Amino acid sequence: MKLKMMVALSALTLGTVAQAQTTQGVSKTEVLIGSIQDMSGPLAGYGKQARNGMLLRIDELNEQGGVHGRKFKLAVEDSGYDPKKAVLAAQKAGQPGQDLHHGGPLGDSPEHGSHAGAV
Image 1 (cartoon, rainbow, N blue to C red):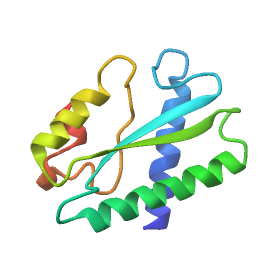
Image 2 (cartoon, rainbow, N blue to C red; image 1 turned 90 degrees about the vertical axis):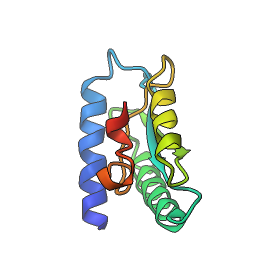
Image 3 (tube, helix red, strand yellow; image 1 turned 135 degrees about the vertical axis):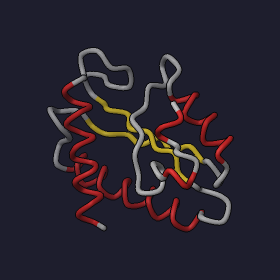
């Protein structure tokens, strides 16, 4: 699980840095990463653990200087195990100034409202 999370975050990081010149949420000093997780509802335990895992890895990356001098910041939206909330969170993330990159072990599950695919 830890290896999966590291690979996913690494892939996300590489994609983010490659688009840094034209992507909102990326500045000269910071990369904003967003995730839609179940922070409430019946799967809140998984969502909170996923968030904690992402925060742990982001802290590790930031302690090492980030990527190309950019520090990472995580923004988590709560879907509450409700597909309607997940769609609203994805729409919010797609608005100008809120362009976030989605990810997470539960955030992309088709049987869980297809959070990332809802945009």
